[in-house]
Image 1 (cartoon, rainbow, N blue to C red):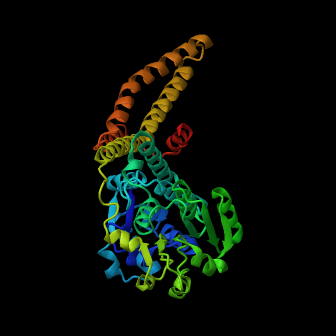
Image 2 (cartoon, rainbow, N blue to C red):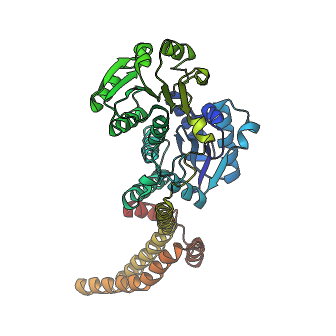
Length: 434
């Protein structure tokens, strides 16, 4: 496996650029398909969230893969390559593995420790599986990263190292509105981020929650889970006028909350209105900031305020997660290196077995009168001798294969015994053992 990651995130790019590059729905599927169809790529996955857009690919060549993925990202986003490139990061092989594990454990999030990224990675993998763009290499890598993420959240206090973006947004809302409990809240959208927002509102003591969504049935389902009320998106103007706090999470590319809507909502109103825009592309027109009594917090303002950069005094938990990442990355890489030598070991045992069978055949031809029971005993003895002779070197070569230069030991074994690990017999046995 030669894993390559090309991407950009809140750490390397302004939110305005991320907004142009992010993909979802059919656009994401088209990008995924085009990445997989590239001649340098054998497996592919796309992770696209409000904080990052990353292309994962199993490639045959580093430079060819980087060029292809960069070109595709520029083409699909419409951002000129010279403008895009200076914000991109590239991770290859071991660095790519470490990056993915760090992302899955919440160490690379805007708010350190948030757990939503695990679900986003899982969704990206399922999408790639459904589209047939992921194979055994990428699937095993991502599954291992997800397990590392679960360990990070179950074995450490990383969840407390930083709240989710919703929690941070509600903290900011509290500074403007005062106590959140008892306020009237409007959630725009009914996706995973909206569900997280609604659940966080409930935990904060908000009991008057309205869910507005283009698909009314989805709004109803989400509203039922939080004891709220559902409305169609057409009812947004009236609900906006009655809300204290609005969280918008659609990200469809059209401004769901325009300046006209907010102006109408604030007409004759004395109470402040707090808008939390967690969508990318943005749902709320930034022009609403000019209206008296209106506060808009979006990903841009969070980024500019440095939210998520500090560890919130939870350095010990973050260090513990980093230790888990290092441990899991090492275990994964050791397993990958050991797996690489498996075809060579199988080829060696296949060669030995063929030699044994050939010699037993010659013995039977030269001594046809050999008693059947004695013949079986000789055959058993010869096979046992060969197995014992091969046991130590095959165990050692698997152990040595886990070291950084482990490939050299397998290569030496192939040279010494003139082995072909791609021979049909070796391949078929390898598939059986897996």
